[in-house]
Length: 473
Image (cartoon, rainbow, N blue to C red):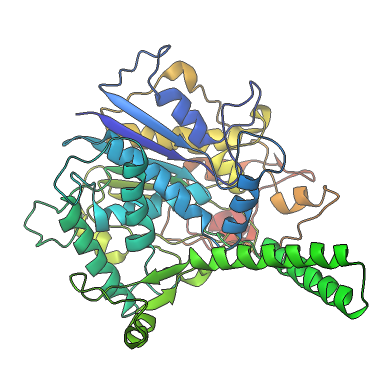
């Protein structure tokens, strides 16, 4: 038995490219846990996979693949590619009895949370539809992973989880997938879930701002401007070459939009043994009735956590104040009750001081004392829950400091010429989640540094938390 550790990084994050690069906590954990020729960790005991964040790439500049990624990310479709990458690696690595650990930050945190829920639906395939062994690499493997993500899990995306008929259809798609690929749970659950679910899911400050409204409006604006120029070239009889150019641009924009919509179309086949014929007009009403456009909506992001997941940990940011980055709820009271009494605790969600990347990392190392706190906590929790995990201490040296520098992403964005005007909205700090002890230490200090000055740490969103009320008297 071995550990399979999957790391999904935040937007734009891709660690390991440059010696003095700003590294997220996810990449730091990956670097300390990966096997390799210079590592004492054996591939027989532990394998790892690092998935860069949405919009990250090894090649600088504008490339067709980057344009495609930006457009897909604008409508929230990019996360599906990240899920496929991670799931394909799990299928490739998995052998019966292996432990699966998922670690993520920011949108990467949402990626691994969604991946855990997809594994509840699909498990880990063990065979192809014809009974042949599952491939360990290549297009056939990726096709299986793509089917699980895009056909099964993403069915009904953007709708409330229990909204019918999408919930029933998604569950039926999962059942069919499990039967086809030999991944039904062998625990007497009557094929209600997959054969394998993660042993540990650890996430740093999940955000689910999967749609990029600014990019959407930019694309719409470019398309509208191109149409206007095309119309003007026809009306005013501009040179034929200009009409051709604007016509080609308009056509390219229409094709791009059509492809973007196409990847969001989901269809449920009521009877797979007698599929409907798209070319038969008599089938069209039933085809249309079982087709929908699936795209991410903030109010309906997936907040579920399977009670069959081994353990779950969530490091939450107190001071993240961008309205687009609210806390994404996780788990249900029923699942918590089902795991009550489990040691270590089944689900822990802890508040940490600092903004989004003060929890998940990616600031310069001399400004990473707050993120070291969350990093040290997550590694400690992982070791407690999965004692077999192997971590190279020399690659994970931390210097946590409760009085460390705190950042403000809204303030920082104003320093750029091309400004992103983030709307401010302090988070609601729910009292049912504990403060990390270092938060209380920070409250006790006479002054702590932030981007504008040094002053007492008194975020108003903490005023009602029972561990902090005495400091707001």
